[in-house]
Length: 304
Image (cartoon, rainbow, N blue to C red; front, side, top):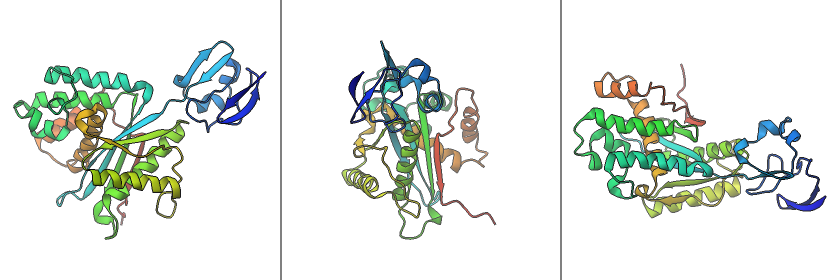
């Protein structure tokens, strides 16, 4: 037996023992010594993702990878009083795979996968035939691009968070974007906590003022819990909120598509418009499964 640093403390463990100190509360990259027999015993087997294990000679090295949560928003309008945030959660080990899928689509669509504004995917621009899709007169071909993006979002490596705020039900002191961001933080923290790992939020940099406000807000939540009567500790989200321009991130482009389709489904669910119906038909495809891992609709309308 030898002393090993396990989750920041010194512990003496035989290769056949489970680390009782850190089970369920491990730090990133922590070392754990367990036996193959112990691996499949409860509660251990139910609590860990097998993709996080790297084998070595006398036991297992547990390599806890981080989840990155990319998010975007669709703001409320006078005729549509709902605010949406769509979050796309991807394990760091799956980033290259997901990005390669979007880059392959960019090659087919723009004949280039370079990260620049001319190869950027925005769902609203695809649908409304704007900017990079202005010359795409064929609606069915634009839908094929949108379908391909939704199929990527449906891959098991991409987990989704759906936040919807019913703005008309807020009181005058409540800001839709601040309430939505709080629920995003809570649901993202719940998700990575359930996965026994840590997460980091990454958003679209619209302006420096908004970026600083969200970063300050998350810092306050981590220090003092979130707001409302049952405020939560956010001890599984790390660092600040990070922001970059969406044309420089395929993952933020996916978050844009997801947040847009959330508002589209809610806004047009009763529509008989043939263009709307074509999208709802597309959403029934076997390859499109947009069920969120975490969601929050608030406030809920009262049923009389």
